[in-house]
Length: 548
Image (cartoon, rainbow, N blue to C red):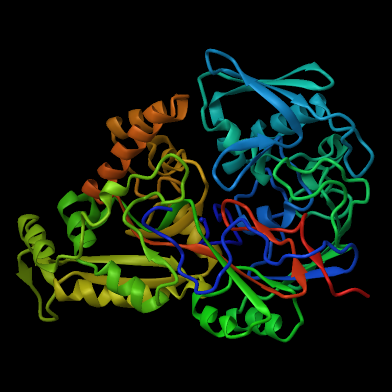
């Protein structure tokens, strides 16, 4: 969820493009030219992955972004959504969809000297599935309770088994969260993975963790032996820079200022409000990628309070002027969301929902009348049986996206129809605690995943609390998302996801607000900078002309 990048569940085409004047296209190089070896690339990031270094137990996108430099995956997802080879040269899926067999690359080694082989795959996947790891997101990507173990066929062949078909597995296998630790580390230091460090954060990747200072910086050095990059990479062999440095700069203006002053070479997660200023500098390239997966959305809790009533949920949905608020706050940098899937989510998005639920204060008022909220108190708010129509919104404020301005706009809209909205800004830890307790009316976040199965994680009844923050418990929805997760027929999956998207809007279970994007800015000294399908910058192919 991109709304909470530092704790717990913190993890972003047609109809919706991130509008960035003069930007290069997502997934392309930030600069042309001949690659240069050596030097240091310094990247400004907005969050601190400290205490989130275990890729198997975290869901923090900042951890996945930074630690992608250390951890490789079996496969890679290309910018068009297709799955391509990486540590696995090829794979086959059994006719019943229960087994995935991978033929692994030869001569791949972890940076501690251990061989990457079938035993390493088994050790890592079994570690994720072990209840002691306390994995939620990685375990879900591995099939959760349906993971039936990994079988070593021979050194270079491994089979991953499931108790039921799991069509989303390959996409999950492309993520950092299903990356691979050196087996000796898992055997001897599993309890140290969360804290991280050069001796335990050990993978097969193009860079090696050298040092980190919580709240300040993280440094990686080149893995000179690396020669097994993903098949969609732009070069082979070792990475170009000798060193990567990530500087943790939470304030938007500070990150942008560090880039314009030359203190950093790349600024990640640039605020939409900083884009116009950066675009006036001809030495800076700004690239924006609309996020696949769950847009920034509001979850209305079905299990308690006023949102137990579908009519009240629908009134809330139609009583907030989303289009005007998103335009006013983000100035066209983000698009208004119409669905609980972003338009760039491969083979999943249903564009037919666009424009079908516009702002309509009169309709919202009629729905509240029908729900029995016909009284009015001295402050102008609706009442029923002497109780005010009110909902609290405990929210984590992501400074780069100025969500407080959205809250203020929606509060004003709802007051016009007699609905009291009470904002309760919280820090990340308190917000997560509240999610687990279920004691809230509204929750909010976005979640980057280029796979329609993200709907199962947020709507399946068994995933409440937290993922299913609305506490949806509908047998039909359960059937749709479960069947879609099992089907290997793309047309069937898309049809099922279309049904879910339409149901969500009708039920007002989740109210999509805007399609976030990862905005990355880089200096003219940087070449070869690409983004993955989620918009996260990839440093393996990048180089710098700034040399010592």
